[in-house]
Image (cartoon, rainbow, N blue to C red):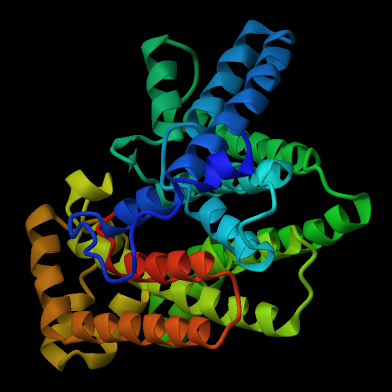
Length: 383
């Protein structure tokens, strides 16, 4: 796909135009990256088809396993990471450079994202993802329906781990297909590896926090947000995009780092709110899961910090034993502490910082407009 064909439909919403209140991030992503998303999905499908076929040659069952992994990758999603990487690249190179050579690298981030999601769903024992059964639940259901030996849930979890592992390998293979000189691709790889390490670090802290919530804190919850979400959702993809054109301007790197951290943290803080107050029909996940598990999110940690003694006693009742009615009551307690309002202010502060950072940065104007819209949408999203 030629660059002018791809970029011709990327800018549809000006900063002063209204954004769909029902799903702002979907509206902005559709506005700025309609053709990019199509190109990414095409690259992924073209790459995955022969990979699945090659595994099917080993054994028919391997083909089914690989097809399940492929379906996880192509199951939809916002393509947020490849979008931020694209605009990080575009901000530096401008509108005239063809995007085809770097499309495999951009698509790589979606394979990495699938790896993280599938493993995260196992660790969180999540039943739904984007309104559909999660990978481990779907595999377990097929195992049970076939009447196979062994525990179906355990089998589903084991296969999901392997699906995530396969997606990580596929990501490495696809990145290697990026049409860049070898020394530059090695530089890209260094940033990509750092992103993966930070993602795993954030995920470990997230898991650790659930085992010791009484000794967790708002600061530590924000550290989880920074590494589990901000780093690999916004900050590192932006820097990854810049590295695809060999950018080494310290001003750009510093600005992308600051913008990415601020928007990424806002993204996670909004996720914390949606995890308690989101509409399951929109989020594709049950509401209140964080309260059921007692996950020490910034929202819950802040609520405990601000709570009165009576509210603190009520909040001590979070955990897997919590009923549906009790979840609703706990959500009201969290709101009554003032934690929701404070999280909203924290989101606003981070978006203001991100936009101020962009104002002071010299980059392609179309990219600046897109990044402004994406920052605002990340803060206002409903899914």
